[in-house]
Length: 165
View (tube, rainbow, N blue to C red):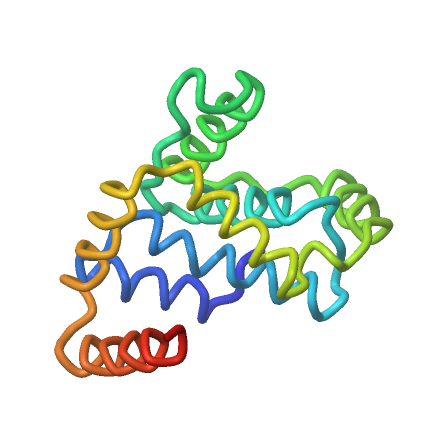
């Protein structure tokens, strides 16, 4: 069950006109925190991300399921099921099933949320996108940032460029 403040942050992102993936990012961040805190583990960083995305869809974030061919058919079907669950009135989750899921995740290791694992995942994910796609994503992010945060980001970028030389 996502925490109340996570839902509130996602709703604020929606009001600000941010993309569904940004709204879902709040749930992914929460999931990474859970793994770090030791609430449960994850087999891989991708699994932790997938759990967060599923929670986001079930909480009503309008994040579409991946297109055919992008992921396995089972993953796509699960995403569609979560999306449908988020659009319709909620049934109370099965206590036995919830407990079984949590106990299975508690047996997994916690390294999936380490800074190294997250950095590896981010690099791998970025390398699958073209430079044009990466550029347009950055421009889209800058548009919804607002002047103060854009200025802070520009300063950080300048520092990074200076450090790289």
